[in-house]
Image (cartoon, rainbow, N blue to C red):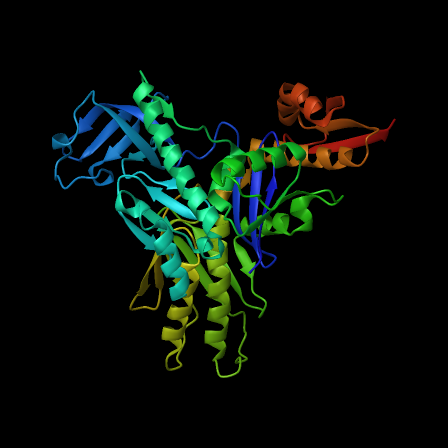
Amino acid sequence: MKKVLLIEEGPFETRGALLNDDTVIELQIERPGDVSRVGQFYHGRVSKILPDMNIAFVDIGEKTDGFLQLSDLHTTATNLNSVITEGEKLLLQVSKDAKGDKGPQLGARFALHGPNLIYRPTSQGLTLSKNIKNATDRSQIEKLLGGFADNAGITVRTSADKAPEPLLFSEMTSLISEWEEVKAAQKASKKPQPVGRAETPLTRILQTLFTSDTRLIVNNSSALNATKSYLAHRLPGIEADAELWNKQEPLFEAMGANAAIELALQKRVPLKSGGNITLEPTEAAIVIDVNSAGQTRAAGRQSAALATNLEAALEICRQIRLRNYAGIIIIDFIQMNGKGDAKELTSFLQTLLEQDPCPSRMIGMTEIGLMQITRKRTRPQLSDIMRKSCPQCEADGVVPDDTTILAHLFRELQDIVRFSPNVSLHIKSGNELALRLERQKAMLEKELARPISISIDAALSENEYGINQDVQ
């Protein structure tokens, strides 16, 4: 399998797209000021304990307190009051991002993630991915890393199977060094605050999507330099396979990532057989329905229903990753009557879920034939990042949010000037967008290295725009 990570950096957002054999399998969008904090360490102070709920609120030096549950601590105690006290200072790590009025979830089950390894300094033991199946490979990895696991927990990811031993050893020592830096920073902290290295949109994407067997393509030289610098720290002594995109067609457009994003924002996804799947996020669960659309032809020895369900399962698992669905997922597959069909579908679906790096659990079929899955929440849904409720719609309509519009506009401007150095730019837009553009004008001119003029066009809606270009 050939894995390629595309990174498109910009002032409003940085986008990552992971491809496997030329198919986009995962997307990640990070924005300055709103970077995921999962994995970030904090020097916190317990501000309030709710003993009846076994929950504590923790001051982390930000507007909203984080919260800590008894289950997120290494303890056999049954009451949080017996473990921590109000005013106590703790080193904690974010396990879930803030959502709405709820602050980030914190814990002391620390984990530092590398491209091939996960280092858990307060645990113990060596765990290898089930997908590393070769006994000789497993034995060599155990021999190389087993000594480290005497004093810490180490999880070996699937990508480590193809990594040379010097790289794994280098990565292991780098993670240990990073943990020592975190502890030293926390010890020196006088007040609640983040400790350890600060994440950027670029490094967050690299941390989540990059593995050592991945080829990297980035859209500008500054992002390329930052990528190499980050990986040199994470994998010291190893030359990363990273290159600069220098073709005229935009990177995400040429590699199919833009099309994948568009499809991942749609309710209905077509299948090659002629059927389709519909995906409906609700407050309680993600509901997915498989529709054969009249497809009745069997595929070899498989019934038509099973063939469509297997095809749908493949696309469903892909869409779950692309959209970053989490929580309870209910799938209504087409009813099957063939002997062994349900077992074959369940086995295939389980195999697909095991390929997803985000933890999930297949609970199984209900009595009425609905498949139940749960998936851990690690990042916001793609649609929640890119869209907002429509202010004019009385129904549950959505529209692109302000940052999505600005980021899309910037990419259009960037594509124009990239191969047209003498072009001048004039943007006509609706009133609301024009005001936002005026506030960002100096930054845009600096990024694009040319003056920009902005005017209001009354014929355009609030967030519509047009670009006029003249060759000087």
